[in-house]
Image 1 (cartoon, one colour):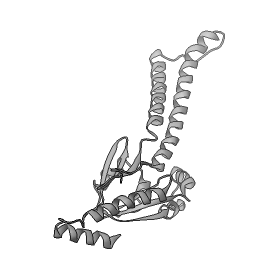
Image 2: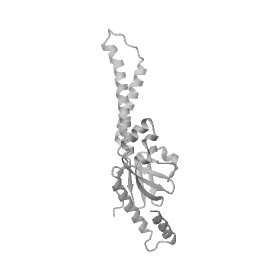
Image 3: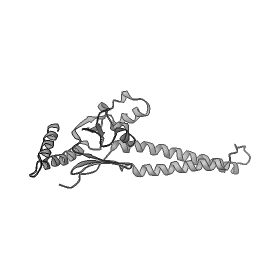
Image 4: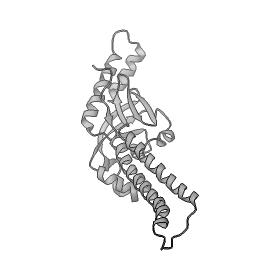
Length: 216
């Protein structure tokens, strides 16, 4: 078996960045156009009265527009950089700002659940409801964990609230092909469990393997 599985992109992460970069692009273009218009029009149309704006204000507006455009390119460049990938002993969850190794010892079980059952759109309002509606029929892989690898509050700083179905140690992973991801992860996790039963294993490891198998 390969030492690592395939990378499965995190749909929710990509989906949210796709929304954000469109907003930042629109804001940047509007601010640059505003700064250019307030600079050029009074010179070209001298017969019309225009509101006089200080040069430093125009530079601030243009700078903010340039920053928004730069942020847009950054968001586009990282939109596909979030993924999950099975390894021999753990599951890697990687985003541009977070690297999380989830040991198979922490995973009690994995199940597949539609997003609309995890996060009913009717429970939310405004942008959250608009965000969830197109994803409602998609199937997510939900990991029931013994505990969090990092404090929940820390994870919430880097991951959307829609990675967390409830207050318990459960993690919802929405990938393009949930069945392929589940089979990939189960293959590596099963191999890891079998390795605990190899000759030379300690009674403690045998007991751990027995507990983990009973929770599968």
